[in-house]
Amino acid sequence: MTAIVLRPVTEDDLALLRRFVTEPGLVGLDWGGFTDPHEPARRFAADGYLGGTSSRLIVEREQVATGFVAWGRRHFGNPETTAYWEIGIALLPEWRGQGIGWRAQAMLCDYLFTHTPLQRVQAGTHPENIAEQKSLVKAGFQREGVIRSCEFRAGRWRDGHLYSRLRDDPAPDLRS
Image (cartoon, rainbow, N blue to C red; front, side, top):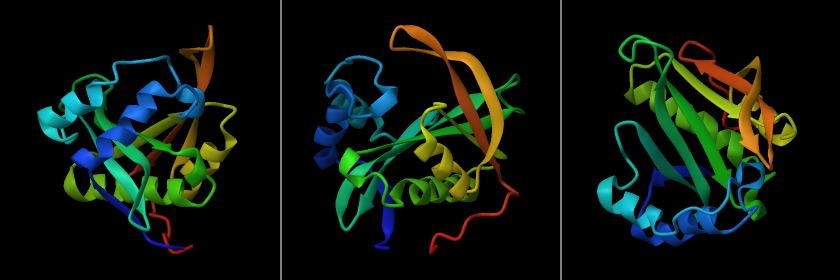
């Protein structure tokens, strides 16, 4: 397996990020309708996609941008004592199914556990996205359960599946 690299967003990546907000279906089930095509450039100009509460890194393989990973700070109650990271990934269709996604998500968890004190990283996915469910488990996540009617998509409310990885959970072997 060729090495996967996570790197900061550059100006050259803005066309890729713009595609994810303007091409229906490019993100699969996560397509929520068209959004502002200029937002990626504004966000990059504001903080390079490395903000205090939400950030993105480009997923690269063989020096080609294949998509991005994202994370945001969330909390259950008191933001000082119950904070956790919620992560997500979007890969271009031609790069899916090659082991990039689970490796990128595992690497992002390792990055967050190394550089921040938060205890928990969580990710949600759709019940019908079996590939992502397998990817999260391979990346060291455990399935926690179903979140009922958590997302309005394609005209109706739908359930989601919640996964988490804790700081003390074993990290997967990225070489496998």
